[in-house]
Length: 477
Image (tube, rainbow, N blue to C red; front, side, top):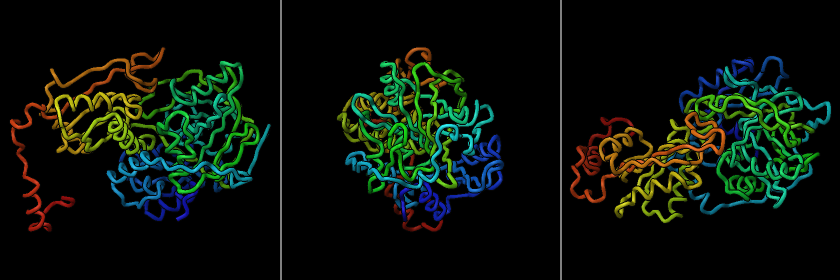
């Protein structure tokens, strides 16, 4: 299957039975309502909205894109039926070997089919939903890439930040402190210069995933994307800023963020499930050029109460990244990592280990809660024994209830990396910090030989039952 752009991915998920087409839903309320309902349960199909009232036929919106493992697998070129743990191991292997292909500059591509400049720029011609009832307006950028170039090193960063449509040629951008785009913008503004920026609002979902992940500072997300797709990402230079964007993109626009130029941005219902950040003045993008394919498709990844499109795809990546970073820090015998969807794939981590020494569990918890992939907005880090499935929340809570003495096995740490999106962030005015808890829910190391035996059938008995009574046992046993 071709795997170059968003349309290839849509064809792939439709072939896998993972797409539903809805015609006639209006963008101010109904499209967001559909997405909210479909996101309430993992595994519901992706949604492609067509015949949007008030817009030309063929101008479409795709959402609920990555709330199933099969759809993530299709984006990464894996068999749709690969399991969650296979997906985590794929990410681990990908990050260890870091395959990459530098982007390849081309003279043109589908994005060049419509080029608008000056008074012809109008991002409002793209059907853009108000995703939640209380949002401050339509957001053209939820599943987007924001392109900026470091003025010192020339490094190109492709990050994912929320982009609100304000006027035909004005968009607002919200970037949390510490994020790469905010750092780059600050370098231009410290010199009194405007910051060039390009926004891509429809691309291959694998590129969107990379834009939203913790790719290390100085690394080019499109090079990593080429490693996933198995070939260089073809790029064209935006006419005014020269910033390179994927030539097969659906929609892109470019412009400048001038020092002190802000618009009232938000609110947007966020991945933390709340309108925690409210509305505030945020940097304005003054748009110089807009480009789009014929019959453009806007892609949305909508933050909401978990499960949601904005966090599910992050979970398996984060599990692989935390796992690798634990091993890189010298933590032995890590048996599993899971970023729980109920915590937006950030607030809650579970790490399973085979204990080798006293303090092993606490060491693993401390590192997991503050390594780069696990630090942002972390609140709960739970370490369990290898017999506990970290993806099974009942097993995890059982371990917390029966193997943890809070006097010795619970630590509260202050001053963690957080965000204004966190409704419990205690330092929203300065550098946005939070407190976090590390829970050692492992059998105490010095009691491993004397701890009570678990009242559950052995694996050997399970195997004998499966061999003799397979047709009478529960599905999946």
